[in-house]
Amino acid sequence: MTHPTLATFRPATTEPAWMRRSLIGLVIVLLTVLLFAPLIAVFAEAGKRGLVFALQSLADPDAQSAIRLTLTVAAISVPLNAAFGIAAAWAITKFDWRGKAFMITLIDLPFSVSPVVAGLCFVLLFGANSAIGGWLVAAGHPVIFAVPGVVVATMFITFPFVARELIPVMTEQGRAEEEAALTLGASGWRIFFTVTVPNIRWALLYGVLLCNARAMGEFGAVAVVSGKIRGQTSTMPLMIEMLYNEYLSVAAFTMATLLALLALVTLTLKSALEWRFADQLAASSRH
Image (tube, rainbow, N blue to C red; front, side):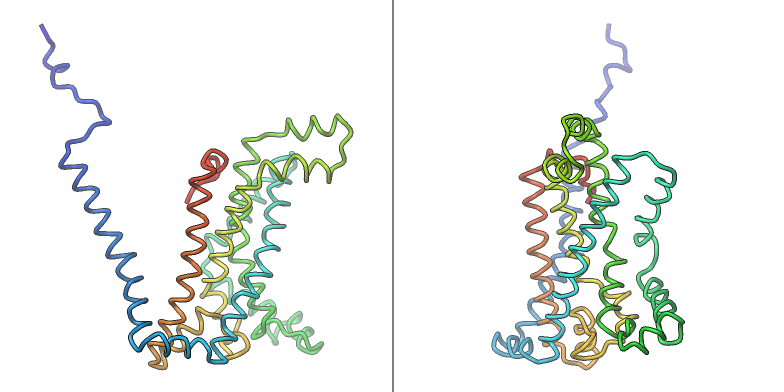
């Protein structure tokens, strides 16, 4: 005789077909409303007056300056943050020392601090009315309302990305290979380039892509420290806001389209890495 409780037992991992279809439909609706519809609207608004007008708006000197500055800031901040991320991950995972937990907390700090607050902190630190900022201005090297301030703010906002991708991977790999190479007489730099880097190369590239995407799209901290000076300190996100506030909607959406295309390229490369090197990225894939 079958026990009534066992007869009605259903595995917890199976759901009715209607529930699966409902959940899938809900996800599709949310993605359409929150992601695809705004993206389509941006492209539609950019092409409202034709391709020629859109290209002419990008040829404007202020727009060209914003594009160059965005790419320049990304080209400076991403390699520097990659170097910092490698050094931080190496120090945290390969050595035992006091303050390691505090270092990890500091790495996560930009995730918990508002970008606007971070920008205000840099203004207080490097502004013309501060001791350091006043000395830099007197020396002819201002930071706030200048390109260096944009670079510094972008670096602060984006520096956790590479480190946070490398730390789980290097923790899982352990120290055995490096210690074996050390016992064979390899130098520190040789161990790093021949043992460590090949093991982390895909996680490193993954983190660099994420860092680059955030660097190009950063708005809050950059808006505070840049002063939004046309042709000098205005990045693409800032230029989009200024154009839209001036009712130049087609030019604003054209710039937004270009920024979205750059983001889509980054997303495509990120997805390709996740698909091609899923095993190597399994330890750090949290996005």
